[in-house]
Image (cartoon, rainbow, N blue to C red):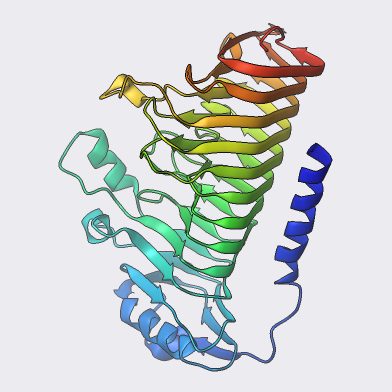
Length: 394
C-alpha cells in the first residue's frame, strides 16, 4: 500500500509540474504604471490594479501584469474570472502594501482575492498587509474586525504561487479554497509568533496541491489542512515559530468532507507548538482522515512533535464535550528525529467511538532534555517498526 501511495503521488505531481514546464507563447505585457498606479506607497493604486486586471483578463492572448519596483498602496481587490485566456502572470518586482488603518481591510474576507480563474501565476514580490495594529487591537480585547486573508484563490485551477513573501497578514496569509492543480513554491511567510489566526498556508476543499521549498514563520499553523483536501504534497518546508503542520480542526460540522492522500516530507520544525498534528472537535461528524504520510522530519524544541487530538478545544471554552465522529486511519510517521520541549513527545488521543486505526510509527527518535521522552496513547491501534523512541505506545 505504501509503495502504491508514493508512486501515485509522484505521478500526480509530475503532472502538476508539467503544467508549468512550457513557456507561454508571446504574451501581452500590461504595466500597472500605464494604468495610473504609483509606486510611492502613498497614492491609492487600487483602481489602477483593477483596470490592469480587466485588460489582461479581457485579452484573448497570454498576459503578463507587471508591477515594477516600488511600494503600491492597495485596498481590497477581487481579481474575478472568467477570463478570455487561461495564462495570466502577475509579476511583482515591488511591494504591495495595505492601508495603515486596519479597519480599511478588516471587514473584508481577503485583501487580494482571485475567484474563478484558470492558469494564473503570482510570481515574486512582497505582500505587506500591515497586520500588527489589528493584532494589538485583538490582544486588548477591543471591538476589532476579524481581519482579511492576504492572498486567496477560490474555485480556481492551474494556479502557481512562486517566490512570494507575505508579511504581517491580518489573518491567514495564503488560502487555497475549492481549487485544483495548485503549486506553491519558494514562499516566505513572516509574522510574529504571537500573531493570532495567521496561518501560513491554508488548504481546503481542494485537490492536487503541492507546497514546497518554503519558509513559514507565523503565530498559528504554518500549514493548515481543512476538510475536502485530497492529494496534497508538502516538501522542504521550514516551520517556526508557529503551531506546526495541522490537519484540522475537523468536526466543525456534521456533514464534512474527508481529508485523504496527504504526504509531508523533508520538513524542519523550530520551537513550534506542534510538529505533525491532527485535530478534531469532540462532536459527531461523518468526516474522516485517511492515507497520511509524515516522513523525514527534524524537530527542534517542539512542544508536541507528534499529536492526534480528537478532544480539540482551544482555551477550554465552549467545549462540545461529546465524542469525535472523525475516523482516522492509515497514518504513518517515518524517520522523525529531534527534541521535544515537553516530556510527552508522542500523544495520540483518539476518539473512544472511532479509535484511530492503521497508525504506523517507524524509525522515530525523539528526546527530551537529552533523555528518552514519553508517549501517551488512547484508543489508537497500529504498530511500531524499526527503532521507535519513545516506544510502547501502540
